[in-house]
Image 1 (cartoon, rainbow, N blue to C red):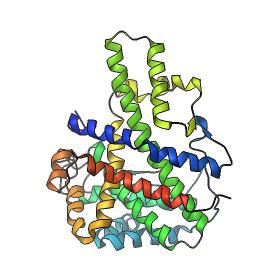
Image 2: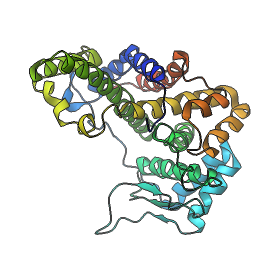
Image 3: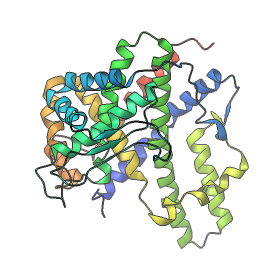
Image 4: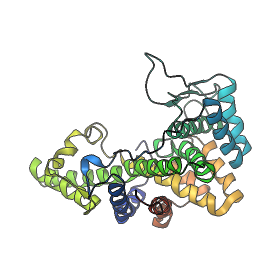
Length: 338
C-alpha cells in the first residue's frame, strides 16, 4: 500500500523479469570464463573480476561527475555543485566513521548531506554520482512540504541511478584504460542482477509460498519450491547446490516486510527504461524526467509517470530496461577472455 503500485503492474514487471533470465545466464557463463572456471557456483556469482588499480583524485572525480551532469542539464550540475559549495559532503575515510555511502535530507529547505568513503577507485566515482543524484532529487522536489517531498521507494532511486549511468557512460566513452571500462561494465551488470533479477525471483517465491501455506504445505515442500525457483533463474549457467534450498529462510524481508522486494526491481528497471528513452529522444525527454523528480512523493507513481507519458502497465516499457542490460553484456562479450 505504501508504494501505491497497482497489482497488475507488479504482475507485468515480474513476468518480464521471468522472460529475461537468459540475459543474466549469458552473463554468468561469461563471468565464469573470466574467472577461469567451467561454471560458476551459486557462491561465486558476486566474485569480482576487477583487473584495474587505477585511482582518481577526489577533485578530478568531482569534476567528472559535475561535467557529466552538466552534459545532461545545467540545473543538475548546479544543484550538485551546491552540495560541494556548502560543504555538505563528507568523503574522507577515517577511524570510527560509518562505512558505506548515503544521502540524508533533513527537510526541504536544507541542502542534503552526502556521506562517502572515497578511496579513488572508479566504483567510488560512480558512488559519488549516485549519492549526488539523490541530493538532486531532493532539491528538485523542495517546493513540497516535508510530508510529500520524499519520493516513494519505487521512485527513490530514479535520479541517483540515472546520475550514476551518466557518469558510467562518460567513463566508457572517454577512459583510455580498457581495464577500467571493463570493470565498470562488470559492476553495472552485477548491480543489475542483485537489484532486479534476484529481487524479482524473491517476489515470485513469496507469492508461491503464500499460496502453498494456504494448501498446508510443509517447510520442506516450500524449500523444494525455492530450489526450483533458483534453477529457473540460473538455468545451467550456475551450479546451485542443494543447501541453497534453505536460502529463503535467511532473507529478512520475506518476514519483516512481505511483498516489499519487488520495489527494488521496479525502481532499477524503471531507471534503465527511462535512460534508454533519453538516449533515443534526447532533449525531448528532459522536461518529462524533470517533472518526475520535481513531484517528489506528492503523487502516486503510476499517475505521475502517466502524466510524464510513461505507461508502466505495458510490458514493452519494462523490456526496454532489459535491452540496456543486454547491451552491457554484449559489450563485455566483445573483450577477449585472457
